[in-house]
Amino acid sequence: MMKRVAFVAVAALLGSAPAARAEMVDKVAAVVNRDIITLSEVQQRVAPELARINAGDPAKRAELRAQLMKTGLDTLIGEKLMEAQIAELGITATEGQVDELVNDVRRQNDNMDQAQFEQALAAEGLTLAKYRDILRKKILRDQLLRAKVGPKVKVTEEDLKAAYNQYARAEGEDSEVHARHILVSVDPKATEEQVAAARKKAEGIAQEARREGMDFSALARARSEGPSAADGGDLGWFKRGVMVAAFEKVAFNLKQGEVSEPVRTNFGWHVLKVEERRSVAAAPYEEMRPKLEGKLIEQKTEKFLEQYVQELRQKASVEVKM
Image (cartoon, rainbow, N blue to C red; front, side, top):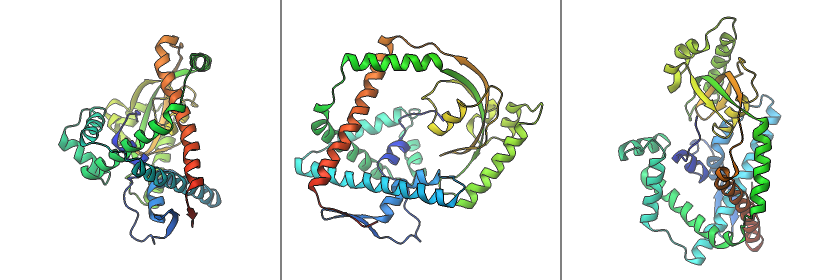
């Protein structure tokens, strides 16, 4: 559950989701100058987010799907425009740069050896060659952004102190939690029926966990399908920003001793129980300064990136057909 710079995260960011189902009919979603973006490309890009939609109302589900598809198409259009700029400016990436990024990802994923790494990629429907191509495109885009957006991104000491004051206020009101969970795993390629069946199973476990006198840790050892089952589903103490968003939101809204409804993540359905809560003190400014600076740079880069893509789009021929 811990956040890390995982290859799956990079793959999802750059649109390397598994191929769309064979029964999908491919259509043109947009034409960018002379490049075509197909409907299946958009579906592949938003597949992980589509899988997490669990709205019960069909109309709401359709609305969320439409929003995701539009966002995915806009992202792909932006990438096509940036690729054209990369080619025009002659920006390149060396094999050494790709090697370095691959090795960095491996190190941050439990120092996987080559065989383990390729097996993990295969589980995501990727070959090493395809993954290297994904990383190469990331390097190229990063270089383009440094050239076109980087000079506009400036973080002042005043910005940093304002961000720290906001952090300190929030931290003073916040807490960290000690939680356990029970996982009902769901295969990434599971059908809607399989996802629904797994949720029903998780709902039954949640009801069982709420019974008076029920030992949640014993129940986790018996019923959880996650790696923490042997430890009674123990996740230890954690602050905000450590767990994935959906999981974190529920954990920090539960009262001490409370058991959640099933929560969906990429791993499946989780039933959480908060064992304890405690307040946390804000870290000193000098300790937080590098993190805050990185966050502000990221936020400002995102803002100027959107402006840059809009400028490229205004100069290009973009025909949306979806």
